[in-house]
Amino acid sequence: MNWQQWEPFYLQIVSKMGYDIEEDRKAALLLRKLLLENENYILAETIKERIKEKVYVFGAGPSLEKGLSEGKFSGTLIASDGSTSALLEYGIVPDVIVTDLDGRFDDIKRANDLGAYVVVHSHGDNMDKLKAYVPKLKNILGTCQTEPLDIVYNFGGFTDGDRAVFLAEELGAKEIFLVGFDFGEIVGKWSKPYLKEHSPIWESKRKKFKIAQTLLEWLEKNGRAKITKL
Ligand SMILES: Nc1ncnc2c1ncn2[C@@H]1O[C@H](COP(=O)(O)OP(=O)(O)OP(=O)(O)O)[C@@H](O)[C@H]1O
Ligand SMILES: Nc1nc2c(c(=O)[nH]1)N=C(CO)CN2
Ligand SMILES: [Mg+2]
Image 1: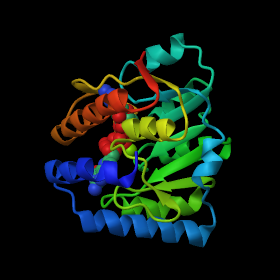
Image 2 (image 1 turned 120 degrees about the vertical axis):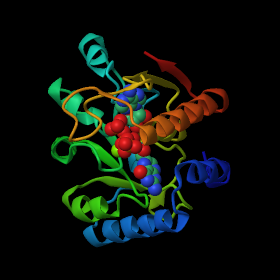
Image 3 (image 1 turned 135 degrees about the vertical axis):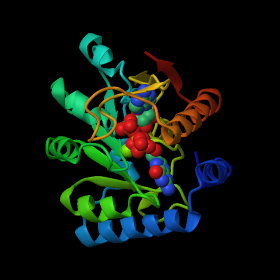
Image 4 (image 1 turned 90 degrees about the vertical axis):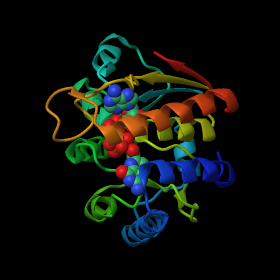
């Protein structure tokens, strides 16, 4: 998805969630500056080499544990944010992590040290996390939700989970399997560092899930990849 296609979705999201477009733009510029200063960025063509035709994207829903214990995964493995912790518990290092840096950072860092590329998303509410964590990582692909910059991309998508699916589709995946994408009323315990248990959904998360589902439905209809929920 390119910027022209994404902009109307983004404007709706801003109005539903009450975000500040200028803050989102500021975050994109901040991420660009940090990546240039630390020389730890990669380009889309580098990450594209890792995206095979068959891709598994892992969400942080309660069904993730069952999916991980029963599944056999071949192809490219993409962890969305908090799901990284669960994959590591199962001895799996993802090829790519898609995050706005509010999962368990120690796990994101460990997977990155073991070879995972990290797609770091910038937005108006994570500038403190960008400053604290971007210098600690390597092989970062920067993304934003406003107009893309030279080394900060926008492939569309909103939450880490659906954004990972948009990235995979844009970079050539033909078959995308979703694991741990329950949405629904219970947020998986891997979602936030402070959650000890699967937890009842809160209002802002409910809105985020609704937007994520709408975006995934759009991609199923309009994208080039077959998307299957496992
Ligand atoms: N029941 C669920 N609980 C948690 N995540 C889910 C669930 N169902 C689907 N997901 C997907 O898993 C992804 C990873 O979860 P996580 O909570 O770590 O993401 P997030 O996008 O960083 O959330 P936030 O918007 O709160 O930062 C979500 O972005 C969402 O798309
Ligand atoms: N401004 C802003 N943008 C976002 C946010 C957020 O909390 N604030 N969360 C996201 C991941 O779900 C994606 N985009
Ligand atoms: Mg996140």
